[in-house]
Image 1 (cartoon, helix red, strand yellow):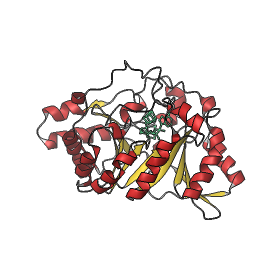
Image 2: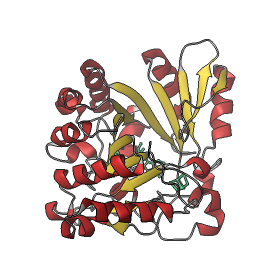
Image 3: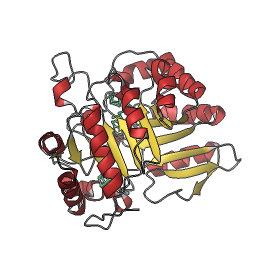
Length: 335
Ligand code: SAM
Ligand code: SF4
Ligand code: SF4
């Protein structure tokens, strides 16, 4: 397998592709409604990478940079028209072993079957509370939790593997940790708790609202003992834990309290076609301009290799010193 190493000796393995900056939710920690209102200048069609452009870039990333995993994200990826057509193209790329999607789940009843047939392997469905009222508040659009349950059901029926993501904010939804853990243990889906992160510039992040990995572990362990499990592969983002009674697994993504930059093998392609080598970067490299003006794939590969080999990002490790820097909004590059 090709391994291009960055300045901190990390290979690239995982490419996250944001296919739209639009979303049907307005989660308070990601796209607060007061900022992403009716007049917000979302990207128009010409500004987005086309499916052919995404396919071309993903093919080069797989062939020449060692990417084996793709994750489709957004905004809400299922807001992008004809998404199964893109999945079908990506599934045919030699070297790609795994295609996943992160979604709020509400549109899965319409698309789960088509996505599975097109070659999608897995979905990660975001759900922050089982409390119907709190869920409505947190999604910023008063959307019913039943829509997410219907999405989970549709994904299961279609045969997609499912994980659930819960962003935990102290004082907002920390009381939902135990009910969520109990529910998804029973349902047999892996639940992953994500520490509230200081992504973008608009989500009013505050360290006091971060429920740390340790706090989450202690809480769950006090009800249902858990034990740590080693990662399945290098660069796995979540710390894994098994219930001691053998009834399932949870994961914790601790970007704030226990940074994992040392093994970060991920790059992100934004909806408007820029390459970001860190979730918290201030700016990306305009690959759209390059692919729209360059016919020769070898020239593009040379640029991609240069970008990765010059990378030295480790924002989470340096958060204290860097926390005031301007950052790209989450809705442009996905999680
Ligand atoms: N709309 C899709 C969804 O919500 O799953 C995909 C895009 S969303 C930006 C990707 C993931 O990032 C979601 O699981 C979401 O909960 C997470 N996320 C967004 N803002 C976050 C924040 N401030 N801290 C931690 N996770 C966040
Ligand atoms: Fe939309 Fe996902 Fe962001 Fe929520 S987290 S606003 S669903 S993009
Ligand atoms: Fe990777 Fe940047 Fe996150 Fe560190 S902060 S794990 S470098 S994306």
